[in-house]
Image 1 (cartoon, rainbow, N blue to C red):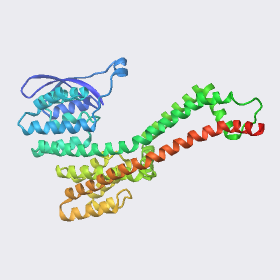
Image 2: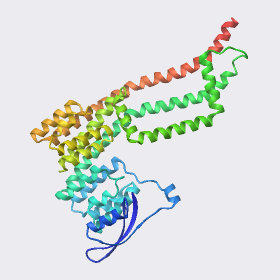
Image 3: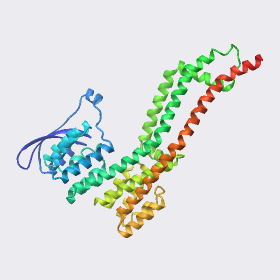
Image 4: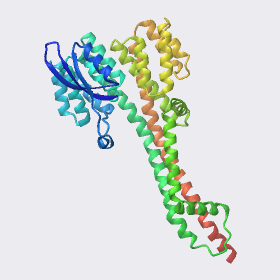
Amino acid sequence: MALFAYEVITKTGELLKGQLEAADEYAVADNLRKIGHTVIDIVEIKPSFFQNAFKAKVKASVGDLSLLCRQLAAMLDAGVPLTRSLFTLSIQTTNKGLGRILEEIARNIEGGMSFTDAISAYPHIFPSIFSGMVKAGEVGGTLEEALGRLADQLQKDKFLRDSLRSATFYPAAIGIFSVLLLLGMLFFLVPLFMGFFPPGTPLPLPTKIVVALSNSLRSLWYLWFLTVFLLAILLRTYLRSPLGKQQWDRLKFRLPLFGPLFHRAVIARFSRTLSTLFSGGIPVVQALEAAGAATGNSLVEEAAKEAAEKVQEGKSIAGPLGESPVFPPMVTQMVSIGEESGSLPDLLNRIADFFEEEVAVMTKGLTGMLEPIMLIVVGLLVGSMLLALYMPIFSVITQGM
C-alpha cells in the first residue's frame, strides 16, 4: 500500500484535495470516480530514506479499536454527524498515529467517500471484520448498532489475547532469566572455578563440556552472536511463509499443556466473530471467510474458506466444518442445531462463552502449575552446572585424603 495525494472536482464543482492509501494510482482514481468526483491529478507521496528509516508504522491495538467503536457509536447515537465525531475522536485519542488516520478518514468522507471505503484504505489498521460490519451498518442504516456489536466483539477478543499473554508470560520470563543466568555463569563463574583446579587435574566429561563451552563463548562470542542472529532471521522468515505458518499453527495445537489452551482460544474467537458478523447482516460466505481470517490461525482460516466454498454449492455450514479436525464435534453439532432452529448467532455466542470460560480456567491452572515446574527446571540447570564445576575439586580432595 502506498499513499497518494489527489485533486478532484466534486459534484458541486468545488476543488477538493486530500490523501488516500491504495495499492496504486489506478485504484485511487477508481475509488474517487465511484463517488462521483472528477479526477484532476494523482501523485504518489514518496517519503525520503530518513523518513522511512525513522517513521514508525502506525498501529492500533484491539483495545484502541474497541474504545473507538464504543465512543463513535455513542456519539452517533447522540445525533453527532459522522465526520464531526471522527474529528473529535482524532483529537481525543491517545494513539496519535490513529488520530491522524481518523482525521484523514473524516476528510475523505467530507469529500464524498463512504465510511466503508475510507477505512478500507487502511487495512493494516482496520481488519476485514471492521470494514465488513461498517458496510453492513451503512447499508442497513444501523451504523451505531453495528459499531456497538463490533466494540463488544473486540473487547471479547482483547480478553482472549490477554488470557493467552498472561499464560505464556511467566514461562517466557523464566526462560529468559534462565538463559541470562547460565550465560553469566559461563562468562564469569566458570573462569573463576578454573583457577581452583590444580594443573594436570583430570577433568570429568561434564566439567570438560562446561569449560569448553565457556572458553568458546568468551573467545568466539561474535560468532555465537552472528549465528544466533542469522538463525533468528531464518526462523522468522520461515514462520512468515505460508508453509511455515501452517506448520507452526499445527504445532501450537499439539504443544503439551499449552496446545488445548491455544485451540480453545482460536475456536472461541472464530465463534464470537462469526456470531457478530451474522448478527450484523453479513452474508454467510463473506462472514465465514472474515471469521477464519480474524482467528490468526491458518488451519482455521483454510477450513473456513473450504466451508464457504461448499456453502456456495448449496451445502450447510455444519457439514463442511465437521469435515475439518480443527473444529470439535460439540461446535459442529451446535452449529447444525442453530441452522435448523434459525438461532445460529445466539448458539455461536454460547459456544464462544463456553470456550472463553475454559480459557480463563485453564490460564489460572497453568499459571499455578508452571510456577513450581519452572523453578525446578532452573534449579536443575544451575545445580547441574555447579556440580560439574565442583566435581574436580571433590576428586582432588578425595585423592588427598
